[in-house]
Length: 386
Length: 125
Image (cartoon, rainbow over all chains, first blue to last red; front, side):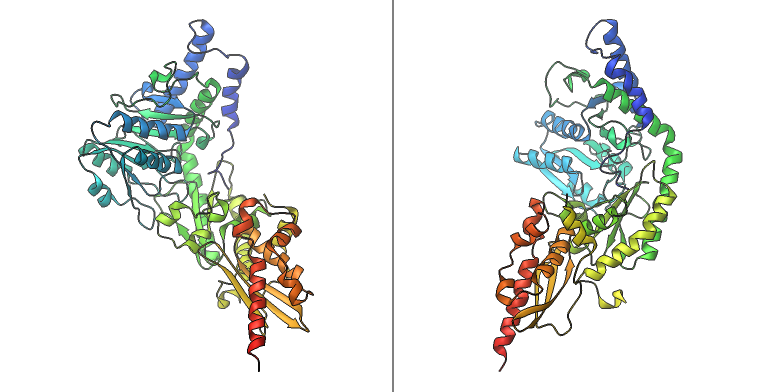
């Protein structure tokens, strides 16, 4: 149940990609028919991705190497293009590290960045966001949904706010695309990042939606591929795979999200009912269909992961002990959890292959794993051990 | 990521619990950092006849606590004071580098418990 870190490739996606490794290996920049076949494969994929997010035109989609590059292109591309207009960027405290670290980098380059706080459920504070806008503001960048705590942001309201104030609006939709409906036109989104491997597509491919008329500068210069915004020979099999993944995600979204929400809520309710001093992180309803982030007092996340792994259950954690920096997740800190609570958080990310039997299996084993670790912990109150 | 020995001590930790009439108790770490451990010792004729622990922390924290109790039981006070973090890690077949510092506190907790015992001995009339 750790689909957040890496999803398996859908076999139908692999089928679609296969021929572009060995048979149709043309370079789309070539004029001969071989090149044309590659070019048309890219354009079909572009249409599929455009449809997934209800873009007006396929040409508004630029293929990249993934969500991180899309975020880099969007934020740096807007920032450098609009330097003369202003140097202020607004984002939130719970963005993905790719957004946060780009913003930190830009701060060193002389840009001002406001990190708007979120409430206890991880929802961005709209009043503070509105108050942060000034005459120097050139960009608002807010994630569609948070992959760790699952909370979906009020994108419609933020889009409206950006439009009213004539500020560009970028949305990191890596965790949300293919899972919840996105309509960049109705939601007043100017730029939107998506990643292929977060919707059962291949790794190493992503896309950035750039609304027609939105001017940005490229961050990778070269032969001028992708309308000059992303030079470098196109990753044809990857792009084809992403297109197929987008198509499948769109056609299966309604039924799959309904199924996942059912499983997710069974898991959350089961855990909260069975395990005392367990809590849900993130918003109870405005959350990704596949995400359950749960926290258990008095114990630490990495030992929980190991305890579950012994039974073949894979999950991840916001604990410092599982990170390279030894810092607890900035997202859990931003929703106001004290360190020791953040350490005891587990992220369940459900996927296509997750069944009710899997959820039942977790509900059968998790209470014992928690109980065993609590029995070891000096923090556990005595009455809980009886 | 962890050695078999670490996983063995994590899944079947030895000497878990508290000693009600302990001769010395030592606590190190901090729940804020994600690791907190308490060691309890029972001393007879200058030897550690019983050592127990309680730990809040990651897999390495639990395994090092368990290993430390195994290494300590039966040793004299002087010998037990020589048990080092490195020795604990070595007996577990090594630890990931990032865990060597933050989660390898059990030897320190043992030394604290011994200091507590020695202080109590001195205070005795």
